Amino acid sequence: MSIAVTTWSLEQTSPSDLRPASAPEGDVRVVRAEVPSPEFSRFLYASVGGDIRWTDRLGMTYAEWEKWLDRPGVETWVAYDRGTPAGYVELAAQDGGDVEIVYFGLIPAFRGRRIGGHLLSYGVARAWDLAERWPGLPATSRVWLHTCSKDGPHAMDNYLRRGFRLFATKVEEEDEVATPGPWPGALG
Image (cartoon, rainbow, N blue to C red; front, side, top):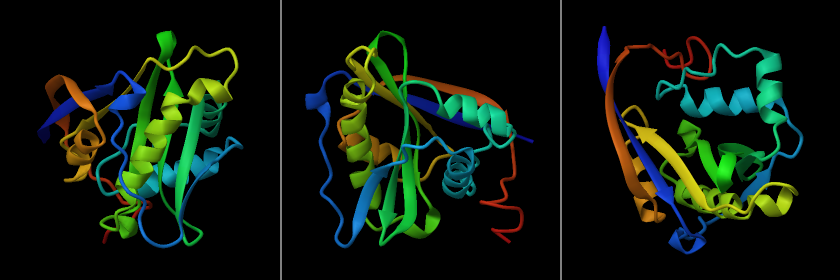
């Protein structure tokens, strides 16, 4: 069985485009995972995307994860709520000063707590100053991402409220894929 999936591509072309969300109440911190860890990155990916059909990385080997995470300009920023991972944003430098927000989201138990807007704001700010942490990379000239109709119901609104503008839309048929949550049987 196939489903129609709409993908929207959004961008910011200046740091002044960012409209930050206010920080949530409580002990919420955003910290860079500075040591590339395939185990931790796969945990974040599966935990955030397990219920919204993120499947493209599930078949990656340890070596493939390691190679991706070890690239210059790839960063993972993790939101912690009272010491527990709540979500993450993954950045990747690209040619010509572009920085892609490759993945962004919250673990289901942390959604609806005003952490997402704060984490996205923080991640976008880190995309704009990425070259400061990676000598040899060009200054960021554009931050972009894509979201789709499979993502959470508040994703697009969060991106627009943070100052992103739509620059492309496409609709494609995809095979329906059942996702197990963070591990098989987690959603059952």
